[in-house]
Image: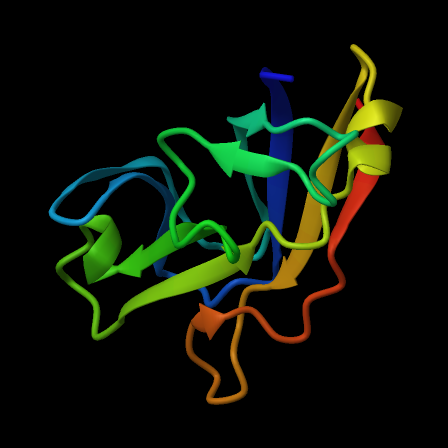
Length: 146
């Protein structure tokens, strides 16, 4: 089964006056898209990933595409922050890793033309700066009607 699904990351209460963006590509060959300056509002990033695999053989779907990072058994998506997102008038230079783990075949089968899978993640870390590294706590991906 090869198909595409739409995912959305909601960044809740991100650190104000910092740029956040979705990383497209990997290694030194990437660009930051959907750049947004955090104000008092939450930020959202919507994108598509390819779903590969066979649910009769594979316990979990496999993900690919220009937004997908990481080794086969632990795929994730990056949110670039501050200097990493191209904002050079800030002290922040971070990336937030949002895991794709936990998305099941059942989740994918539940999607329809008017639904997506959404992850809600905190935008500010314990140090008061932008949340970074692997997102914690991570409540996973949930079906959302659009």
